[in-house]
Image 1 (cartoon, rainbow, N blue to C red):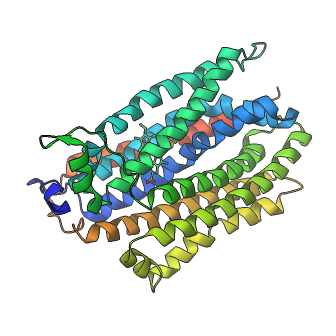
Image 2 (tube, protein in one colour; image 1 turned 90 degrees about the horizontal axis):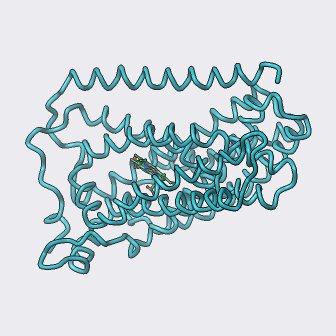
Image 3 (tube, protein in one colour; image 1 turned 90 degrees about the vertical axis):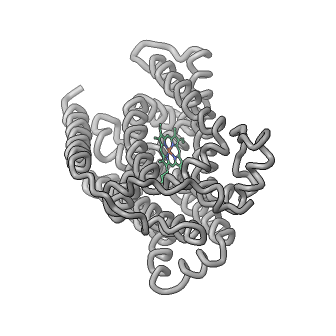
Length: 373
Ligand code: HEM
């Protein structure tokens, strides 16, 4: 059995839009997904530690983030749907076989996410003025934190298995009965899995630090100057840790890439993109460094934008690596296009309207924070 025999057959319908359109929205959607996803991936874990062991400012940070978390999760899930749709449209021939091989862990994500989301709500009810964080509510917060980390691991499994075609025949044979896959596989035999997941964790550390500055400079107008000073100091230290973590795990990840992906990403012209993706976090770090004594609104917004740029660079490079890895078996750009204009226009209108609503909501929060307490 060869991996190509397990790839899904091409759809007679073809792509409903040109490949460049599908991949642009896949990458943009993933970049938008990463911002809130990083905040719950690392942020909730840290919020739980700070709530229990932090000083007064760390506890304040924890309560601020957790109060915002229900909205952050809602945004992150909706933004996640965008790349999921485009993955299903443009990469269906490998996405579906991979997620069939690991169907049960993949399905588990819905269950984990439901419990994690409820857990956050239960925790947040303990943060209402006058309410007390009972042991049950604390436990709900911890369960959510752990479930989010578990979900992230399952996502890394799913998307790395999607391009690790050489492992499919063995995985299928190990986890099938009379040819029918049981769907109990995971991509743990893939050397890229752990560094890839840990690199994402490192990137999430930096996003949490950048968001701390953004929140302190834009939303936390009513917080004390001491809190804002603490936030500046904490963000600088945390971003530095994230930067080192990202560099170490990123180098490990790069060393596990297939030789052709490494060759292409490390030679001209893609080396420029690889270098930008690797060095990119230096810019938000510098901006945070300039604000170590005082966070200003303009620089805080710039820090947020710079971090968004870092995530976008990462999403673009990862997309190119994904295509190189698949290139041995499948050319995703070669599918015939059968343009479906009306759903495309509906999507674009709803996407822009949706983003408009998000910007409007953030503006409202910003205005509310400026009102006297
Ligand atoms: C229903 C909600 C969610 C949807 C629809 C969703 C969708 C996606 C999609 C489509 C990707 C891959 C994007 C691409 O390769 O272009 C992705 C990646 C990822 N997601 Fe989400 N996501 C959701 C919730 C979560 C949650 C709760 C977590 C937990 C932390 C999470 C963590 C991740 C991670 C770590 C990756 C990167 C995986 C890798 O490639 O190594 N996502 N998500």
